[in-house]
Amino acid sequence: DETVDEAVAAFYYPQQGIRSWGGAPRVNSAGKERLEYAAWWNANGMLWMQIESIEAVTHARYLAKPGVDCLSFGPADLTFSMEGHPNHALQTVDACVEYVAKALEGTTTAVCFRNGNPSTRQKYADMGVTVFLE
Image (cartoon, rainbow, N blue to C red; front, side, top):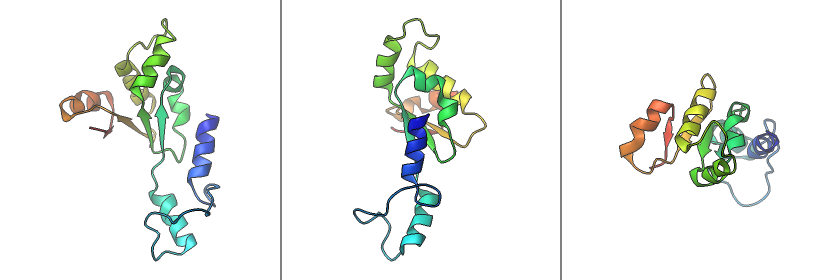
């Protein structure tokens, strides 16, 4: 929850966040002045948070804060976490995906899954996934 707050603040430029203007040139910044670019970024940047633990799964609704566009799964790390909780009700990555998709219903935060190829797209779409990495 605190990690998400920090990420949202660092991702967006003032007045929406606290992102610094310093550093390398920005993507798509050619010809834009600072405030114009910051407004463009704040309107078009996509902030994704990675779900890699059973705790993140069960708290997904609280991670779907304003400014977070997508929650994406890290299935390998999530599997390690599930193995550390052998008595937890959610025992498969698919069960976790379905749980998160249901938890995010009614929010503006999308659910992403690395399904690997188009052949499994419909299976995950039926669970509520709307962003696919194939």
